[in-house]
Image (cartoon, rainbow, N blue to C red):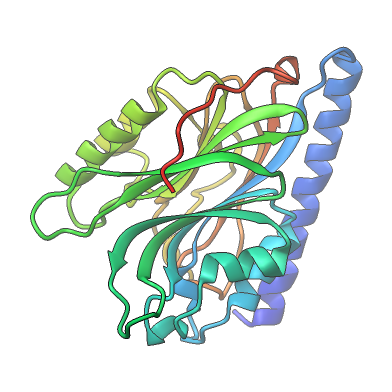
Length: 293
């Protein structure tokens, strides 16, 4: 599909999401003037270290896609930080935050020595971008066996329009269901019984009908199942055939719309959701956890 057509489709999707969110938010405000729901746009995007389906490394393209949607909270997977020549040794999380003027935290799941003394450590992992300031954060390493890749769960506490939200992003093992099941169990344990609204984003490397997704949806609502239309396939970008990327949330949050955006920027397609945060939690005190920096 030509890139101009992809962009036109993406902008049409964004316009539709914006219209629906504005309508539903206005309706809620009239129905509950004392505590209207607070809208927030959330994206989950495996950026493939910025390399698109055309093989071109282009972080500006990734930033443009995030900006076009107007995402206010973004969970990113496959993010390089001074990793190697494939991404020009750039701190991709910091660079995207700079281009988008957003706050950012980074979870290094692979953490290697630099090639030369005095250079930054070479890291690979996940990131969370947020329009709102990030109050605290931590990265929890997930279960791993043998020589399989180390995975992690990145967590950030933000306040969106007065509502405290604990945002998570993760990227689960791609070639072992047993490992994913163990990792989902660890994710559920970390989330526990939340004191704030929760949003989980991620490349879970599992389809909706698998045991691992069935387990996590005992605790969280799949935004696509709630508000998406169609298959919602996110892999691959060129020929989508599977839904493995998710936005999920606690049941005090409502998904108004969910969509998959057409893009050339990565081998995955980003999934986006227009969520409504509970107005009755505005100003609620957020619990504080220690942050592992």
